[in-house]
Amino acid sequence: MDQKTIENQTRLYLYDLMNTAAEHGFKADEIWQFSLVNEVEKKQLQKTYHPTIATKMLPEAVLEVYHQIKSRLNQTFSKDELQLDKRTVVTDNLNYLVAYNLKRPRT
Image (cartoon, helix red, strand yellow):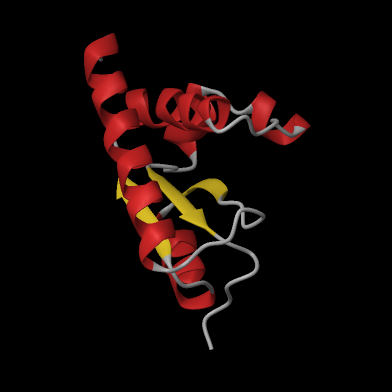
């Protein structure tokens, strides 16, 4: 996967984040959470939170896009997030990047 494709996917995802935050009236202190998940976990997050932004990506792209988005939004990485690698992404079918807000549960 080339760097240009990674960059394009990152920009598109960030664009969706900003539009969705504006549409739903996010306040400055409302922060997106990000998870790399499989399809079952994606559906669970979508049932639990609104809005969510879920995008399916190729395994070779999803981890890099995830890292770029968190970096560009100045979010720190947890120890578990830093230990994620491509092998884990492929083995666990973590091909969805999902953004959600903990302060916005689905009612």
